[in-house]
Structure formats: C-alpha cells, structure tokens
Image 1 (cartoon, rainbow, N blue to C red):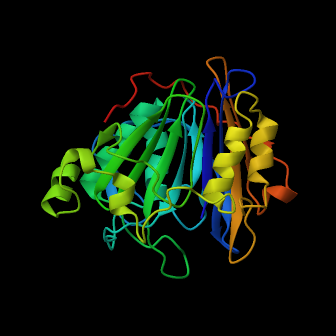
Image 2 (image 1 turned 60 degrees about the horizontal axis):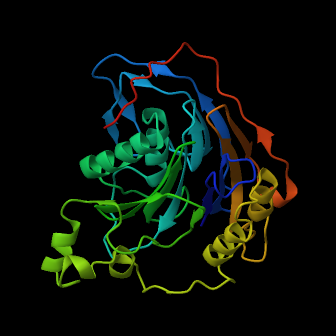
Length: 317
C-alpha cells in the first residue's frame, strides 16, 4: 500500500529531478533507515536475501535504505551514484511463487548493483528471470503480491511492472509519473519479457501483438480507465500534474502528507517511512522519515557512509 512519484527536470522549478515515496506497511511494523558502504567481495561469495541465496557481485555501491527490520530487502532508497528506487505491491492474474526474491529484495539489489537508472532496471529484470519473485511479504500474517518499480537518476526515469514471471518497462521522458498499487503500463511498453506477447496470444488472452495491453490483460479484477480523484493513485497523479513546471521539495512533502486520498495512510496499514530525493548533475540529496506518519514528522537529510572510491565500471546485467 504505497505511492511513488517522479517529477522530471521540465516539471520542477529548478530543473532538478524530484523523487518521493511513502511506504505503507502493516501497523506497528518497524521500518529503519540504514546505510551500507560500498563493499568488495571475494569471487564466488553468496548473499542471503530474505528467503533465498544468490551470487554476490565482487563490488557493490554504497546505499541508504528504508527497510522493514525483519527482511533483507528495502522499500526504497538511494545509492552513491544518484540512483533512487521504490516499489509498489500489485495484484495480478498470474500466480505467486511460494518463494523467490521479494520485490523489496529487488529494490536493494537494484541500488547496490546499478550505477544508473537503466542499469538498475537491467539488474531487476535479469534477477526476475533467473530467480522469480515470491515469498511472504509480511512478518506476522500471509501477504503475497507482485511488484512495480519506479527507478530514476538525474538523466532518466523508468517504470518496471511485473505479473508473475512477466515484466514490462516504460521510460518516463517528461513531466511527472506516479505508481500505486495497480498496474499502469498500457500496451506493450518500451521493453518487455521476450515471451510475454507470444504466450498471451497462445493463451488466447489477445489475438495479436497490436491488441496486447499489459495492464488490461494482467490486472486482477479489471481496470478503471479513469482513476477516481478519491483514490490514492488518482489523487497522487492529480497533485503531481497540478504542480507541473513548479514542482519543488515542498510540493513533494505536501503530496506525501496528504490525507484526502489517504496518501499519508493511518489505520490497519499505515505510512511507516517516507523518502524525498532531489537529483541533479551537481549533487544528489536525500531526506527520509523513519517513523510513522510524515504528516507529523520532519524529513532528515541522509548521508552515505564514507568508503573507499568505487569503480565506475557500472554493472549492466
């Protein structure tokens, strides 16, 4: 139950890129802000994610993460290269695997391994194809879902949406973009799982590539062509568009503290953490809240731990 948005340079008042996310989790769950330095690992080492082990890279980037304490992965965060990333729960027609990488594991892996937004996209889709997504997403009760992701740096932004083993991407080229707890990429996107359209045709979900629509075919319970302004997704989208060309850090704060569409969520699920980032070629700044309810808290500047210089041979898959 989260909302994530991006305002690109043409939408902000100062030409920076502004990213924001509220992390809505079960009431009472502890969410921490943690930092990990850039690290080198011996060849062949494994990393234990929430449920499964996968091979570790020989070099990872320094990261700032907002993560539920009980899991390895993170809801959102940033890395030292100026990449920001957040995920959303989505419910689809495809079955959930009993185990695999959580969407939150993929957030952390994308940040630790992706030196650009597009490199982080490649990390996520490559790991999805190798290990799949799956496993319980809550600490004390059964809660499973698939994931969407918003990834950005100061140069570009991408949305990645998934339905089981299938994935599709959309490059965000101007203005603002937001994601919530529903699929939102229409048509076949910019990049996609290589077998997805052929499988959909074989299963008679559509009759041709031109008829393929990711959101329409894979959304559980159908879709709304026009999002209600009373919904969180509709409210965030409306507020982002309202400030087109005048978007600031204060705009981001006001959106994440908004109650009209339950963007700042109170109740059985509640906003347990929040992040705002400003990205530019000169500098990247990140502010986070590690307690419930951004409507009641001030954002605090996050710093990366001091580490040795990291190689700029960024991982691309």
